[in-house]
Picture 1 (cartoon, rainbow, N blue to C red):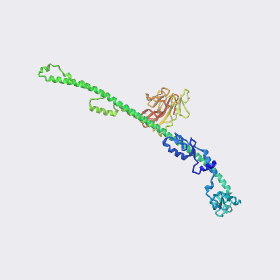
Picture 2 (cartoon, rainbow, N blue to C red):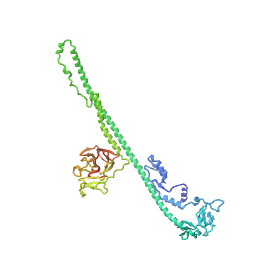
Picture 3 (spheres, one colour):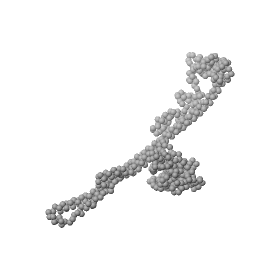
Picture 4 (spheres, helix red, strand yellow):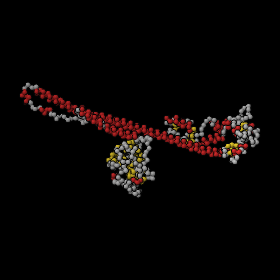
Amino acid sequence: MASEDLKEDQEVSFCLNLFTLRCGHSFCRVCINQVLNTKEGSGVYSCPECRAEFKEWPSLQRNVTLCNAMENFISNNPQQEEITGISCTYCVHSPIPAIISCLLCESSLHNNHLRVHSEEAKHVLTDPSSSIENRKCSIHKELLMYYCTEDAACLCMSCTLAEEHWGHQVEILDEAIERKKEKLSDVLRKLYMQRQKTEERVQRLEECRGRAHQKANREAERLNALFTDIRNQLDDLEKRMHCEISRQEEQESLSISDLIQKLELKKDELSRNIRSIEDLCNMPDPLTILQEPDMGDLCDPEEGEGEEVTGYVDDPEQEEADEDSKGDTGGDYGFQQILHTLSNIISDVNVVFYGQRPADILLDVNTAANNILISDDLKTATRTDKKQNRPETAESFQCFQVMSKERFTSGRHYWDVEIAESGICWVGVCYPSIDRRGWQSYIGSTNKSWSLFIGRGYRNQCSVSHNKSELMLPYQIFSAGVRIYVDYEAGQLSFYELCDPIRHLYTFTTTFTEPLHAAFCVWNKYVKV
């Protein structure tokens, strides 16, 4: 009964490439991919049978048991009557599908006629065929009974006696067919294995495509978070600058008002003095004028001159000239700060590195100090109290440090560094000509190196150093990783904290004159690239 049900289920078209979802339902791989692709924009994938939902692209597993069962069923149930469409030769009133053909009689037989058919050996029975004449020799009109292996030709009895086949190896046709079937079975087995491997590879590629899709979504989310942060920074910067402009305007206005009040008082005093002198000059008695005290000190030319407000000049032309000069230098409203902040924001945008692969940094054992242990894969540098007994050469550092094998002379490059919890280290770049002995060998201590100090074991502080000049940064580093970015031609070295979103810490701007090596100073614990 189960076989009949399965047979009825296969009356429709299907493929044997069946895959199963986590909910247990199986589908054709092409069909289920088409269904899942339609759910791409919604963010939720569902089973078309039971509507079970999946937040991510569901992994597909090939249903090997079901596929094998279908293949066995089809091979054991050829449904010859329906497939061949050949009717019994002797059922003339109502056509009945034949189950066998007789090559000698050149007829096809139903089960009832087969019972009364001759069982002589010369009556060769075979599967139902509409081209029985193809089983007879076209020359002698005899049944094909033999097979010539040298000429790859089917022969009748008369053909085996013909001159063109003398001395050839001849086999009985049925035996040759069986041998050929064995070879074909071996080929079929190999093809099945190749198909299974291909299906497995397709499945792996589907999974890779799913992972690529998830990676793209993560990168898009990072990018959205980054630009959201940039917009917030710009908004905050705009508000701060507006407040600063208003503050300076109010300060200038108060200063100018105070000066105007003083000048108004002076103007009143001058008006009184003018009236007094005018009254004196208009007196009719000249002797009275001579008897009045000298008033020349009322108009002291030095008095009151030079008074001005800070940032304000009482001369429109001079003020306009000053404004032009401020336009070149940033003015009084902090435009230099704006340019610096925007530069940092642009650096934040560049650090997304979408589509760019990190540099493969390997540590150079020949440059490592004897208190630095280098891992076998040349990726981890660990501070150790056990001397490594490496020969001290001109290349090796005296203490705590190691350089990379790679050197950069052009282009843009970045690499990530993992810092141990509670670790203290300096990371950065240096020239190959850096000293390897004394204080001048530490990265950041000379003009041949640049460094970022990370104190995960020291209040999570961080600072940058170059040429003995250290700048404490207003950040604390809580993440385990930092990113170092070099743009050689632009002369930029940038440091970032690998948090979400990634955070810009500082950018050095200079002109690189030598190749650059990644450099590491490990005070305790380890660093890993």
